[in-house]
Image (cartoon, rainbow, N blue to C red; front, side):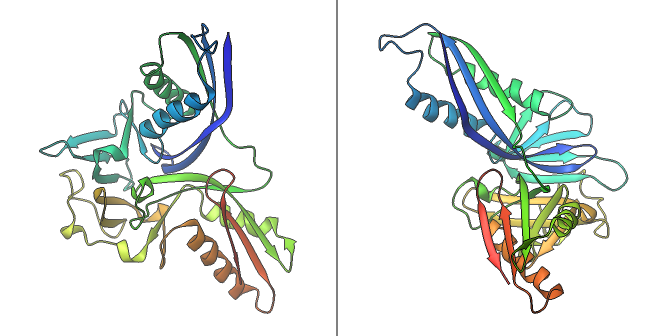
Length: 293
């Protein structure tokens, strides 16, 4: 007997890529369970599937930075009590990435690359450990949203958030819709999505001076002309990130989807004086904010 749940949840995360840097991603999760009927004549109660399995996925990969543990660029150092890790991703040509964050901010994938396939294997192994004995098989599918239009991958951290959005390197794959005087603007959407392809959107107030940061030995030689640093303390602890300026975009406000939508509307509005501007900025799948100028 098989039990299936489509659209069980959406994994919003970021991952380290040798070519692209920090990549924000959103994957929709479908699940199929094989097993014998239990005393309730069920493989597993739908309510339990949605709560239990979703919680397992959330705890393992959602709103985390996924690190390719077997890639030669990856270097991991623990602090004294293992509560926080330094992660150095030593890309060449002045494109290295360095983080110091609470340990729960990371998921280490046992592979040289982070991909749908390697993350599926990782999450599947974690879920299997928690399922009841009557569940004999598990099929897990991660898939991207089908988007009719343009989209971008972005990473951010929200220090004021009281949940996992405060983690400095989590992200989303998000579509963008722009209207001028009520008319959709595909060329403008493409322009912004190209500009923000694989971008980190940082907040001006969080920019840090390198010599005041908790840098690893590998990060000590990083040039402030090529890299930018962010540092903040939130409920979960100290979060720090050093990354290439070429893969970064700074805004004055926080980087919530509401602020991103308003930033885009205001910026575009300056170019289209006297016209009405509407921006629909998405945060992953099926949610977002609308701003006007």
